[in-house]
Image (cartoon, rainbow, N blue to C red; front, top):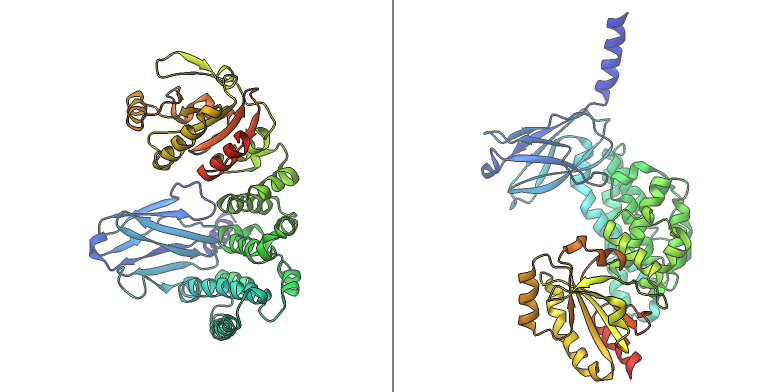
Length: 443
């Protein structure tokens, strides 16, 4: 009875066991090590590794995989994606040379045949279709010539999509790739309002399995790009709709919330970051997975204009500690400038800050430059080389400095404007905002 039971269990297990193997054509990588990574849900560490033998063959020993997208890469090995579906017993691929027309060819695996044949092309076309649909939904911004050109391109792309989907539905309809591509297909026969109503009806934002694919990210990004109104006037509504669609699944909800914040941060849309923070985060900043973004948003929430800037004692160039509040009260306006001699963007910004300092010093402006350097000689060399005559302080502890924690500094350069009562009166983002805000406060 035990033997029968063991055989049944082994048989069931083997149905979901998957062997990822293949061969490299490029002899230059023979003998090299390749690593397997989980693209979307991993911690950045490889989940398996193997060597390419003297004949170019490789075989990963791991057999149990979650459904999703994985990346293979190694030194001198151009990275490539494989889709692992537990319903397939074996994935065998051939990796050609970089200059070959097809980099990766699936020898065994309907999943990867579908992926290699259609995924990159169709997702690129889908994105272009969404862009065209958006532009044609607001025709007042387009000339008649542009409208005609867009319509012609639109029809060409639809024909390509139709042919591609006929192939994939006929030959690869049981694949994860088909499921993703079918869900991402734009509703190109509907008007703008109808597309909005249909966008989340498939329910894919309620399913965690798609987090191991680009679907959730692409679907969310495209909605923010193309369905937040002209000039993003309805961005807050688009954010609400995404999080409402994902609300039943906390794992997906948290992913979408983070990706929305990344999207807004990359575009510098601080007002919408503040909206997300007030409406969906509150004081629960731990929901933000990226530490640097978490620190930045927490700082935006806590160190607002009108709040008191934290006090701190930091060593100056001579080694003696100085208190920030004591420095603040000596000047009508203080530009608190977090920088590092190893930060190229900081060094490019310094000449412009020096111009501002020279122009407004007589009006009561002082620059308090807090360096996050670790080596005193590098810090001192930068001060001497750039002739920095303002107040220079540093604990020389890099990102472990207390100042970066209490001022929620996640990148350099970072700026605060503080008055002589230690109140924050400005949060400029970049040198141009520094110029405008200093001018407004001191003119």
